[in-house]
Image (cartoon, rainbow, N blue to C red):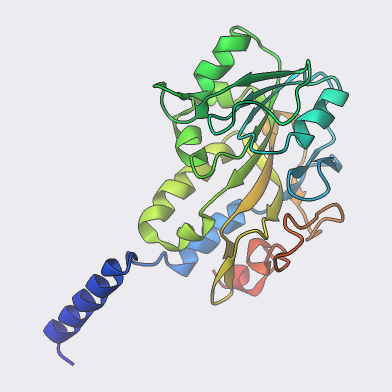
Length: 277
């Protein structure tokens, strides 16, 4: 088949898929993917992980390093505030934000709620993390927690947040959506830039695949659509070594009805794919 015929066939195929609501894009090469996964490998920072929140969806593994933390910022409320309630039981107050609900499902004196979306700009019912923090804690120098589940806007939010603001957070718990788009070479640049920015200041200490979504597999690389990452500020770490417990004994499925997902070997530095690239 000549080059012209192959090009015409590709165009016809792409047009047909586009008409069905799909967009075809070049794939990210395997070596590039593996390089990022190596950087994101969870680290053992010498601090035990504890589970805070519900037994299933809404519960997260975080470092047992909460001493002297007074405040948590928690955008994305939905129907559960188990995480924030358990922090409140430990004396940590939470600022919550979500425009999609009129209030948290339960009210506590330790909760301050804004009916706003967190995002990359200040306009209408949107505000930035910097604006939100300054609204309540302008000039505050203590360390904070961020627990963020904002349905895909986490990338723009992180990329537009100044490093000096991120630096104030001791612990980040972020649910990343659309992680399978790492396979798309165009989207890879955006998503990987977000992770590279976080890795300037934080170690990844835990990753949990959310089994409410599917996992996309290409060869030995498996990337779930949704993944919960826990980060610890490097200022809290004396030594970081690769972690080997996958899944962690405190991990639980987000959904009791969906197929179980565990962190695939491609996220471990000792797997065959990592050895080759």
